[in-house]
Image (cartoon, rainbow, N blue to C red; front, side, top):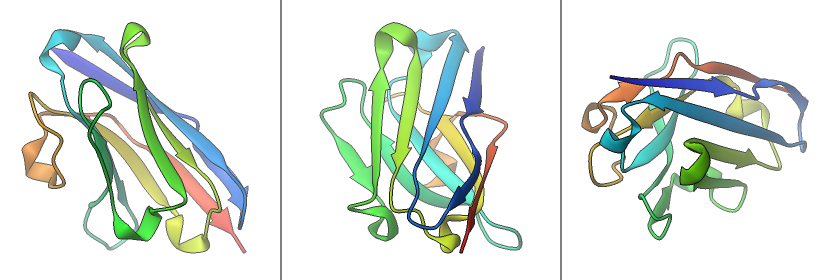
Amino acid sequence: QVQLVESGGGLAQAGGSLRLSCAASGRTSSIYAMGWFRQAPGKEREFVAAISWSGGITYRADSVKGRFTISRDNAKNTLYLQMNSLKPEDTAVYYCAGGNLFPEKKVDEYDYWGQGTQVTVSS
């Protein structure tokens, strides 16, 4: 029905920047809200940021406020996460997710998931 593919992950130094992208294909009309989550080894998948269809409503985890920005380009069916001032604790696999209506902060609220992209931040 829907396929989400993340890209843009890699290695960055502390204080550096990365921009993640998530390309959606298939029945993209089923996706209104979208979000980013991350999961470090041995830890639960945690919320990073979410955005509504129009981009008018955005949520960010306290740990990334002032550093990360979520955005979307519906004409390109693409979700973005601009990550600045990266810290070693940002190291994780980052996943994009899609939902039916409203942006949510919980994993169980999303219907579609990408395969993840690795982000590694060195000190």
